[in-house]
Image 1 (cartoon, rainbow, N blue to C red):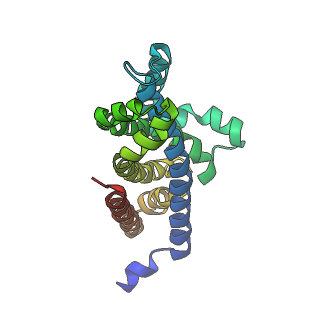
Image 2: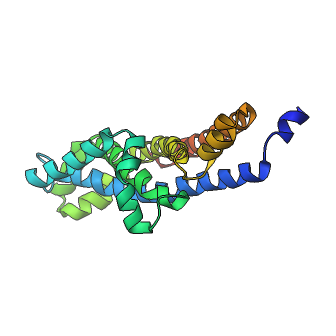
Image 3: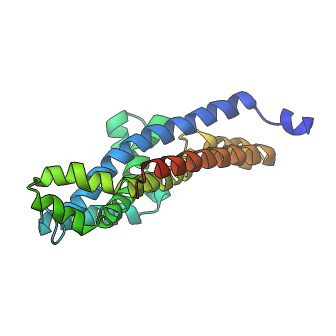
Length: 221
């Protein structure tokens, strides 16, 4: 056991853990905001939506479908010019954020749309009968009623983000993916890879636990 402990550079491991958490939290915030916007656009502009606009719906749906379908490792490579334009570099934890966000936001946007579609149409019709404006329906009916689905969808998305940060680490983004690949796989040190995997699993379990509690808390049904 002591040989295992000594074979791991714990300072680098904790630094990598911090980088993974940093990428997950920052990308999670932007993914949440962009996903809500995309989900609302898809729901509101669809056929029979409150703001039915077929052309806008087709554009947004095409964007979501395209970026949701591209494998993440390929998306990182495709977005290297954009990343360098925005941040001036393609290496490091911050440089990985644009690709992680663009890859995850369309996925979460679809989950938000599904949550909005699950809202009972009778509730919407009742709000309209009471004279509520379309924006009042969005803010006071649709979003509150779909909050459990939105919350559980965000939990799923955050766990997917952990996987994306690990893949981004393979091309120099830092985090547990980098240390598992460079100091674990390439150096033939399976202990490092094992420890990095355990830490990732612990982060995932923590996210799932917090997400489940939040979902139960906001679910008034």
